[in-house]
Image: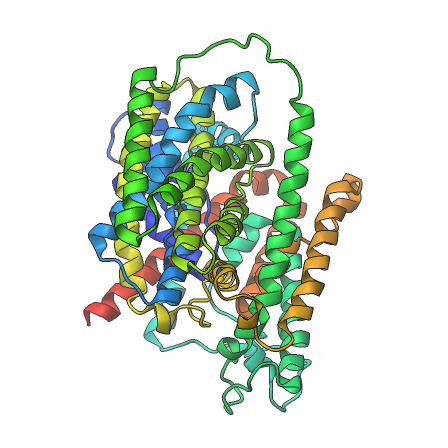
Length: 557
């Protein structure tokens, strides 16, 4: 639980920066192993499995709404939630995911034997570090060493006000300059670490999206009067001005590409599994049936009551959101089992579009009902990765379920506190160059259109959205139906859309990290396979923690 409390701020921080979070199971396993060995205590594989299960459950708490629907609701309504209510809401939504994961474990893992790649990778790593040899010590040194450099750079940047940002050549001196548009080299290593993790295709897709958005469409929007001009200062970023227009085609590109890919994946999965169920070997259930039934009833009651009492959502709409959560969480878990990626955003958008029809004009119901379904789906998919790890290393499922409950409890308390410390003024801080919060922008945009109609859009946004929608559809179709060799060369529509709502310097850092990792894999493939993700995780985790500490110190001062 303490380790989960340490890792949770990393995902809250990165979620508000780039809208992404990462499974912390491997990092938790490495740190736990190193800690207990340093203390001279025996630390077996199964103990470490419970450790990483609880810690990763805590770190995945942001799927409960802390970096998307909750801030979007605050921006639209001006509302706020005190710490106890916020922590309670996040816990209830995430606990729903635990119940779903427990209910579908045997179907997903035993009968259908879905891979859940992150869980397989975690099991392989855990076996490696608990075997003979120096693997664990070397990995831990890399994680801590990279983390120390990343954290130190962040602290120096904060203490100095800001380190110099070198503008890229190729832009004129007239406004908007390269610095205005965000084409500068950022000293932060956080995005470099993310780039090393996500790989060259995503890194290149982000770069293409950044050039299209910030070098081409952004200046065009200013020249045509669709977006206002920024500050006169030649070095000041125009992010806040341009993103108000660019987010509409960017969100459309992300949503259409993601939903199209989800639909194709579900059709393929249905075809693959369209056969009579055979008598699969039965393992012990995750939870005894009476316990599962009681947990289901309690979560149903708590989630529906929370929607009604906290957000004023109608009782039957609240109950519908909970029922949808079980259906869509199972869908998201199946996709994660096949591909390794949980389509949390797509699941949330399905609920937003559904409630746009059920409760037209009600932005609160639109966002918070989708928070329930998206949060349960994200948590269920993440927990099934851990249950897959446990299945491979011989863990007892019920023990893992208990660990997940305590992990979610930790994450709800720590994550809510960290969010409130980092973002005391959502209206003034979010959707800025410092806190781009792209997931917030996406959820907010969909809720506004559902509530206000197309008249809420800025000038020329509709044709830009139409073009982006066609592009997202074509990219998703190409990625899905081209031969694998060619599909790898198709840019990711979701990543390109993301580049429209984060500063261009973030996309540049992503790209540089992806290139560095690709070169390393070419030069030393064995070493890179073992340690690239570990080193990158250190860069991400340490800067995230340093950023949270700095924010807390500024508020305390």
